Length: 106
Image (cartoon, rainbow, N blue to C red):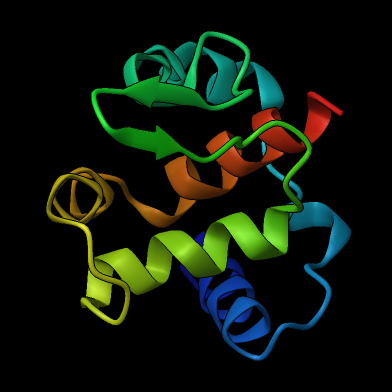
């Protein structure tokens, strides 16, 4: 059943549709994983300059946009060597949880 929920989530995200409320993600779980993102996106997800690169802010990003971006990194539709590597390590639930956490940082 959970697998079906994530299939619906993936379909919604790929078409830019609203994510069902039950798939909104676990912000506490997302926060626990966000430390892996803070090196490039800042501790509060506000974006961060590393070298010559300005890494974008994640705070306040909608779940739909975040999930779509991560799916695109996983498939290679969106190019960034580090993000592609990191995205491929996350399962669908982890991606939604991270997205929910960052959306909550409005």
